Length: 270
Image 1 (cartoon, rainbow, N blue to C red):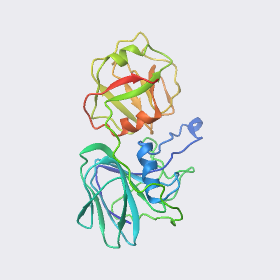
Image 2 (image 1 turned 120 degrees about the horizontal axis):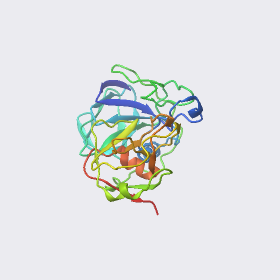
Image 3 (image 1 turned 180 degrees about the vertical axis):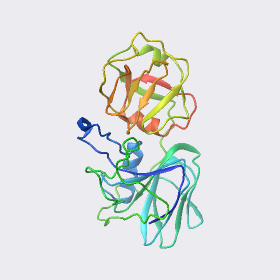
């Protein structure tokens, strides 16, 4: 497949780069793990195969051979050879045909899985692009992205769109009372990215504003001195010195990845 347009941001992502946090290397990997795995299953790939993560649409790919792809995650117009097609199902693309992802109606990040997986050169055991450390392959207009051999069988042939959730599930953090986070309504700061999802709303006052630097995990909700929480994303630093008020569950992190704005609340995990 040849990249004809990228949109705002297109990255190669897989399960991530594990076992290097002690060297300061972020895990990276697909932000919406649920949609990434679903895409692989729709095209018959093993779960570990890399996909393309496209922020906000605008990606255009041109096929150089007969391929099967699946677009998951955000819900919006998908066009193949000028015809409107659906997300969350296998799509067959012929040589010379173009696949175009347009602006989503809901959600934020599309995932494009291809039968055989995108087989760009791995770095430290992963094909994921880390936007903090700039590790892993970058994708540029004109790139001819390699595809591996297809050996699997699809385990699903269609999936309904995921339900809209207006709250994120959390477990308590080690440093502060969880109640102030749960009692407020929050919105998305446009400065958010894969490193950290910043929230806007009524700031939380806390007696602790800094701590000695220590390891951080995906989904940790840090509270900086301005009182506006930050949810750590897949490219987050491996250490941090702000108090942690909560940790977003893995399933809700997929919802965070698709949050394009609008009021949200946190709820305690049961």
